[in-house]
Image (cartoon, helix red, strand yellow):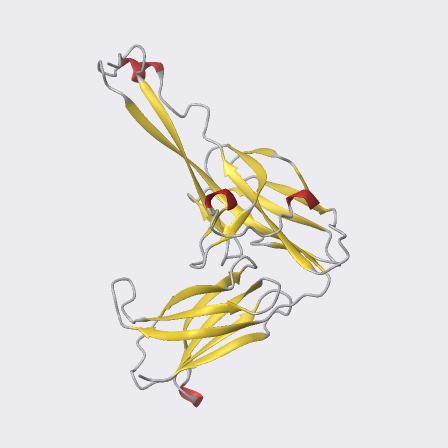
Length: 284
């Protein structure tokens, strides 16, 4: 039997990671902000800066590290160690130097994380990737106090969960010829449902080239001068470890059953604004 004097309290730590995929900056708990949303190194870019902001009302300490992550076919980004069913991409962690490794920021204060590339120099074409991960450490006074532990009844084990939030952005290293090609496959209109009162569009974004693709999906309804944009999803990527990714785009307004729908995927990477793929969904 557990005794209160021996085991008064147990603490658990949960790490919640947000991988930036669609916003120039993102917030976790309205306190941690990081910009830009991704970093790409190539023959012309060998260094970069990432800005970390503490937007909270209290000082905060962050750890900075490189973590290899993979993309699942549904677009989720998870640690490579948690997705052994997916072949991990070639890691860029050995080629990227960064400083600092730990940061303490006062409220409304910012810090620059400096990145420098030591190129792989394999002489061929290819893409390497890792993820810069910023994690908020819990304050020193987090957890049970001695008084709280003493209040535990005999035989009682208390559990306190401390969430460690983190933000992760991709760091991509490209060598040689860049091959960015894609297509939109199997677009399908979905009827209205909870959370999507105007219906939605489901499709698969297929990567055809050797490199990852990154861009914005836009959906237009109608024809000619009546055509209007009814959905947009920014920062949609397909990484080399998967061949295709499923995407669902909720419609912002009703679309009549006889209206055609046009989907456009625009590059926001190597040729910003260039159309990489299009597809038309005819009325059922």
